[in-house]
Length: 73
Image (tube, rainbow, N blue to C red; front, side, top):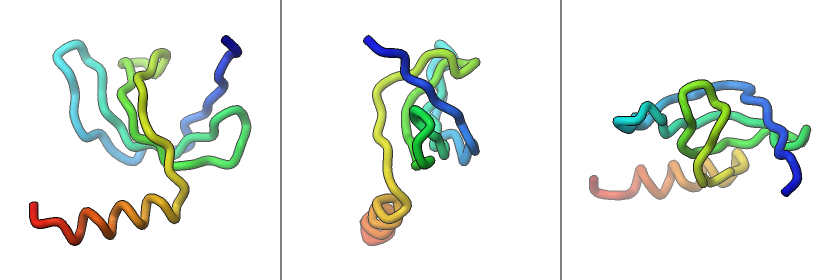
């Protein structure tokens, strides 16, 4: 498997933290030197390991925001 290169441009926020110290974070990340996107996934404490997650463009993130704003939570 090829190495995945990433650079966390901005940490936007943490949604939760597990008992093992992993945090579910929303970050603005550049993957493999591409244009940065918004990314939601679990990260180990020093960001050296990651779990599965989703990566969203700005337009997709706005769409998700609109869906969440219309939900009765």
